[in-house]
Image (cartoon, rainbow, N blue to C red; front, side):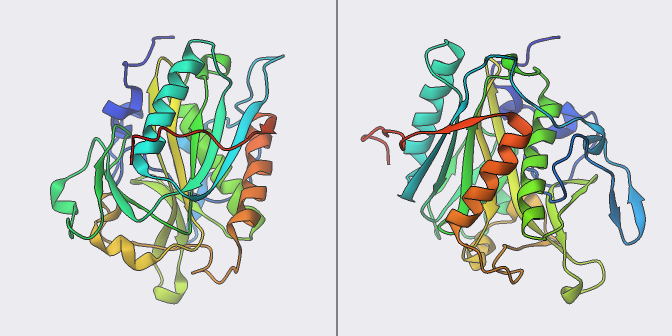
Amino acid sequence: MPWPPVEGIGGKPLERLYKRKFHGSAGSIWAPTRASAVLRPAKYLGESVSNLRDSLAVQFHAEPNSEPIEWAITDGLVGYEQAVAFMEARAEAIASGQAREMVWLLEHPPLYTAGTSSDPADLVEPDRFPVHQTGRGGQYTYHGPGQRVAYVMLDLKRRTPDLRRYVAALEAWIIGTLDAFNVRGERREDRVGVWVRRPDKGEAAEDKIAAIGIRVRRWVTFHGISLNVEPDLSHFSGIVPCGVTEHGVTSLVDLGIPVTLPEVDAVMRRAFVEIFGPTVRVETPLLPSHAA
């Protein structure tokens, strides 16, 4: 199997990875259903929707006798540059065999990030919150309190070095998490993301609830997913989220599910283990003090 470019998806939109056109964030994905071995095709308005990612097996366990994946949760808000500095150092250590794989759950202060496919015209209010240029795939995204960000640092050589399967596995993780709260999310072939139908807003209305934006270096992943639990949804109005203008955003609380971050974290961990394998809880990472 050929090796990916040095920066992986960070410099390659999903439409190139899958050899088809996507609308929205190249490298952002959101959806809910049950995290079983293979995802079933989604249905929209009674019609079957063919989706290449539906056909990919999502079990993504490491090779036998691998160490469990470290699972860390940071309380409070973490600066974006601090998080990126930690991820890059940790990914390098994993690639060099000097550290274990890790999933890191956190929240950021209100900010916007611009992925490698971002269009400056989609930054509607450039002075509203800090804007960070980032090497992950995708376009403009909002992060802020009440949104659970999960940064995933895995060595794909210990699993299957297949970026399409990795993205499908991340989707399935979100799908299984949302399914536990009786929320059904769906893929869309013409745009990336996990979407929730909103019949209360109109027959064809739907909102995005979770996203994926990843980068891969030496087959080690970093960046990851974000799930809207209870963020201030008005903060998304300062950008065109993932370049999609005709649909909105939502959260678990917005859908009428009064859930807390710790409750979501517990479900996320169970759904993650089913797909990626065992985890072990560790202390919160020590962050570089010079990065804000």
